[in-house]
Length: 205
Image (cartoon, rainbow, N blue to C red; front, side, top):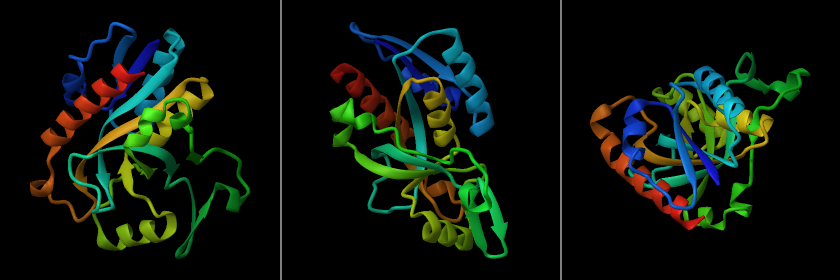
């Protein structure tokens, strides 16, 4: 199987370079941070070579404090949380304002790869601005009930869906979503956990 692992940063790439497989051909792409960069780089990569599976790896922030720092989760649902319009205090998604377009994704890759079910299956949101304000955190929790957030996930699912490539998001939790406090983050633990999870998953399929 030809597998593409997409990560946002070179730091995430470094942790995954050591992964090898006798059964699969593995490439790693560094897309850059954010939805636009991810969509651009991933589209180019998928146009240049045929892949059967794409994995979006890296770190994520968690709204849910029952998820441990360093835990790896499978993002089984993802949403462009900011795609729509504001009507005073009310957020209107695309459908509510009469526009067509995809803003939510549920690829169901765990039906093809049951080993994903050993990870906590979570609902993610994809944002341009990571949350760090108590009021905005409360509002997005009330509106969408997310468990984690990233800056790339829904764009990854969007492109893979358009290109008919099976897509998986496996992310390790580096921090909780709260007022920004880097002292509470553990990126290195998350990266090590992510490396082990991706290596194990690839060996199992």
